[in-house]
Image 1 (cartoon, helix red, strand yellow):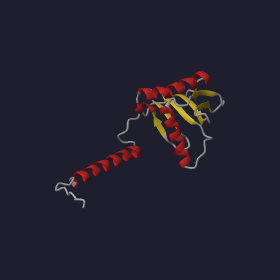
Image 2 (spheres, helix red, strand yellow):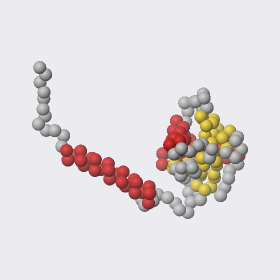
Image 3 (cartoon, helix red, strand yellow):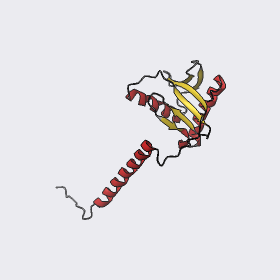
Image 4 (cartoon, rainbow, N blue to C red):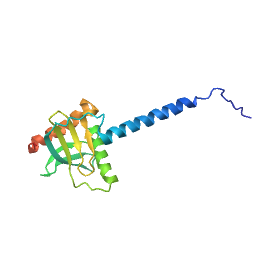
Length: 158
């Protein structure tokens, strides 16, 4: 017969409730900032300095082909197994479109702002990814895409 051991000091429920309340408060604060803009860092005077409209396509061999939306010229190819962050962001944006029942005809916009920020924007869903939030290495991966697009087609300034 197996002997059951009961602990006389179970984990305090107050701690669990406190942790749950902290998580809920964090989610509410993030949602509040996201929908109102209060508590977020933005520069309202910043203007787009360099803008490229780009298509991102997965190839059968695992490469991602980035092409200019206006000319359909290949800007850059990300080989299989490389540029994991860039691939993840692009696939996440594509997944967002798929979940909303949208196609991939509309290009994404990669923008370098006058205040130094770099964003990837989806005009279809309104999603914007601030690359500066992820650190220098990840920022550099998208800066390389923007630089390659500028070198091939010339930049569009606004």
